[in-house]
Image (cartoon, rainbow, N blue to C red; front, side, top):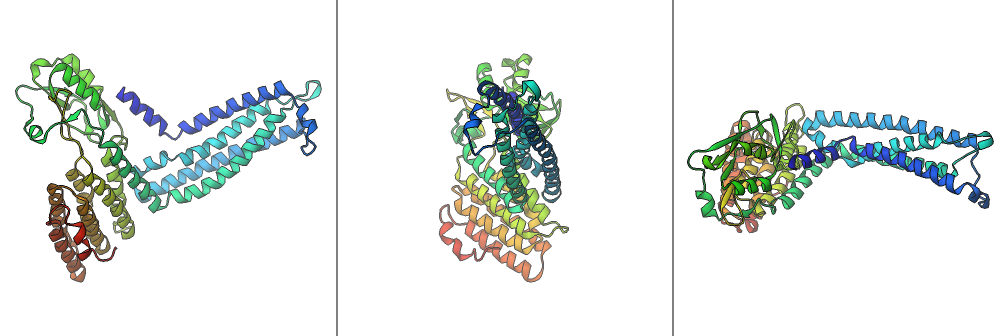
Length: 450
């Protein structure tokens, strides 16, 4: 079931899904309108003095013009989309293409033109002259309305493409998805929480069984509820070796199970079915994939060939917003228990330290070479620190600031180096305050924004 949901999600986010549905809708609409014309006839037009009835040749010419122009514009729209994807891939990184593929504006635009084209063909083939004269008046009017709507969609598409490749829009879309996913994902835990003291002492003992992977690729989804149920039915403790987004190779161990005596090899297939493995990472269950996208954009912006620190500043702002969500959320425990309180699953959940390491830690080497980005880097960490609710979160930020200051001392020189070092020392003193005391003291050191 978990794999089925992942496949359905991949189909819905594919570029062909919406245009195919709209193309089918255009064919069905054509058939319905032909039936309406055949049932009602055209006598109603005689009572409309302001409307001129379309004759056989005129109807054919109108629908032929609509069909020809629609398929031409559809080709142009597809070409523009490919150019936009190529630009985005070269400027922001190939992983950002996932966001463009999911863009409903592009797929609906292409689908509108294809649907109008197929509708016109469906109606055009029914027009007859001579003794059995048949001109579907209703259908022709609907075709004209579809053509007008297509022109409106074309105007929207031109604006949408220009907006969608703007770097601020790209970063905002990724950042908002990161924040929204953090808000909706973390409250949904696998089973019930395990008390901290019990979670720390829970470990696999004795002889263990190992379930190996039957595929090579990235773990795209993980069915935690089924894993918990399998562990409860077998009365075992399962430890996950990987999390969504990790790369696994065929034949390598996926999970460890203890005790070995309660586990049979026939149950391995059920465990494997809980893992969805694919060729690429997806943001559906892998929250850190969105973090990696922002890091990649910022790293490219700070490369010597681009040298765009303001784009890096924008990425840092959204990473800071994501870090604030991590700091203020009840993150899942590594040990999950069943309804009876018995530990059943040892997972590798996302936590605040892993977020800091995968966001600020990975950007450290790039930000340390630019004064503008470096000062804003420290400012954003201070903003995240003000939202922290636990001492170990502040400790993770202090460690990151210390490592960053050491690296910046090697990369920068002169007044720029002194500015970054002074700001780093001020930030470390700020992060040394107690939880809840940082927010009131931020104005003492933040200064202006980069």
